[in-house]
Image (spheres, rainbow, N blue to C red):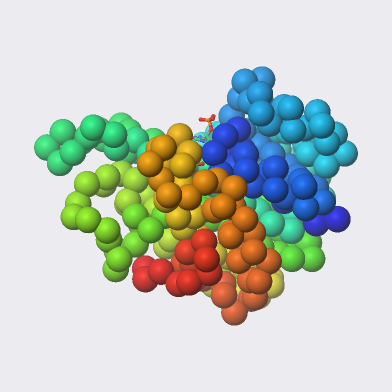
Length: 232
Ligand SMILES: NC(=O)c1ccc[n+]([C@@H]2O[C@H](COP(=O)([O-])OP(=O)(O)OC[C@H]3O[C@@H](n4cnc5c(N)ncnc54)[C@H](OP(=O)(O)O)[C@@H]3O)[C@@H](O)[C@H]2O)c1
């Protein structure tokens, strides 16, 4: 049975990833900041106690990351899915930027995935599939910036995440680990809003198919949910 660890699984894409991988027969370690409040995730775990395990994990909390890595012991993790993310730029534009919010965005979107990768890399290396997938955003593409300016915190946090992915791909190549950055599309979650054209189910179905096809040669690339490449 293949195993996945997902960050930010309380809602949105993370919750949908947990549901689809559980239905596909994977062992799912679904992590979230506040398990007591994660009603949908609790219901999923209660309905599939042998498949879905729920864990507390704030990706900015070093102690929690290390504690979870210790709790899971030597269990191999085939797919480490760095999904947790925040968008804190609402109503803040040039001239009125929220620097504390920007720092928090970097802690969650950039440092969080790296911290989790460092803590779990040995479990990924011990697995059959050896995949680290970081959910990025097209808004982090410098070469393909949509629109002009705005969302400085979010954009820069995902650009920096992409740089982390590229570095990790090289760093971990000799251990047979494939690392990619993935744009999920514009998706109707709390973050994406109701006008987004893709549902979480559609986006995650496409990303799962793309992840299934990932070969080591793809390591260090920035991919759209449909598998096409996005300029850095
Ligand atoms: N939706 C889109 O259109 C879109 C487009 C491009 C990229 N993305 C990316 O896709 C990923 C998932 O986004 P989404 O649309 O599903 O957003 P969402 O519905 O807002 O969900 C975000 C998730 O991240 C979690 N999270 C936030 N801070 C965290 C932390 N410090 N530690 C652990 N978990 C934390 C949230 O947990 P709580 O419930 O505890 O807050 C929630 O589970 C993000 O990386 C986002 O940047 C989304």
